[in-house]
Structures are given as structure tokens and as C-alpha cells.
Length: 278
Image (cartoon, rainbow, N blue to C red; front, side, top):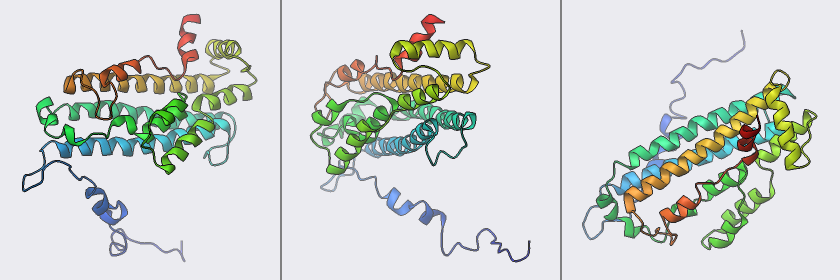
């Protein structure tokens, strides 16, 4: 062990601290309320509203990090962190399990937001227009990567920056999680040329889990991701209805009517249909 340098915890505190590593001054200075002014304090619950949505965006960033890595693992690309075959699929499943835990956290965070009453929200809601959650680019990126690509979103939303437009355009072109899963099926010698062939291959995987254990576990992980995304959409729309009823959204959308139109969305319909043919 001679020749190695050992550093006791705390010795480098002058060079790197907890606050500087996490960039806490910048992070904690990012909660800027729009209400108040002329000597009046901001609406009390605006800080909560900002904090919750900033936390959502941080989680969306983490989710994109994880699903990109899971996709690359299924594709067998460089940087997957694992070897070939089953190990590669295990790594993808492991990352998707982390995605599941984060998505459950996203659903639970709505409980915190619902400690705000409609009256308290109305104290600053008018200040939000025309900003809206509809404009969350990271959330759309997550949907696109998961499999629900919608080029029309880019056309409908006129407030995108050049960088945001480029990010969404890239997501529309790159493979989805479902595309990567089909590559994994094909690598196991299973047919994926059409939806009918994919469905037959999925039945083969489901009925021979000894041979296709990794693929079956991965299919279930994708379905769980789909289910939890649906749970978040359902929880979100109920919260919006509780908060503003049938009012239109601050970004000009139809509010809860639009959100309810998104409830039937499924990332992986063939995995849901498989249940009827087992």
C-alpha cells in the first residue's frame, strides 16, 4: 500500500465544500416569485409552487439520464456499462427500476402541492400567464424517448428557444425505448418485422421465461414505466381539477379537458395487448 496517497475526510474542505459541490448558492437563488411588489410581500404559497416545479424538472433531467442509458444498453451501444447479452439487458432493467422509483416520487409530490388551497393559488396564478406546464420541454423529451413521439407539439408551441427546438427535433429522430427493446428481441432471434410478429415473439417470451428470462423482465419493466407515467397523468389531472376546476390553463390550453384527453396514452400498446392473448 506504500506510495498511495490517502486523504482523510475534511482535509480538502477549503477546496470543495458541500455547498460548492452542489452549487447551492445558485440553486437556492433560483426561486424568484413574481407576485408582490410595491412593498407588499409575495404570495405565501408561490415559493411552494416554484419549488415543486423546479424539483420536477430536476427529476425529469434524471429520468432522461436513466432512460437514455437503458436504451443504449438494449441497443448494445458503447457506454452501456455492461457486457453483451444478458448482462446488458440486466443493466437496462436495473436502470428502469430506478426510473420506477423516481416516477412514484413524482406522483407523491402532488400531495405536497395539494396542501395549497385554490384561494391561495389564485393569489398569484394570474402572474404565471402565459407560462404553463404544457411548455415543459424535458417532459416532452421524456415522452418522445419513451415512445410517444408527437411532432405536432413542436409546431403547436411557438415559445420554444432554438436550443429547445433542436433538442426536441433530435428526440424525434433518435430511437425510442421501444425501438431498443425490439433490437433486444431481434438479438435473441425473435421476429420483429411487423406488429403481428412482435406480438408472436412476445408470446414466445412470456411462455418460455426460462429461456427468455431477461427479455421478460425487461418487458415488464417497460410496462411498469408505462403504468407509472399513466398514474402521474391521472394524479395530475385530478389535482388540476381540484385547484382550478374547468378553467383554461395559463398557457391557453383547455386545462383539465386537455389533460384528460392524454389519459388513454400508452407507450407500449403491444405489451398491454399481450395480456389478452396469454
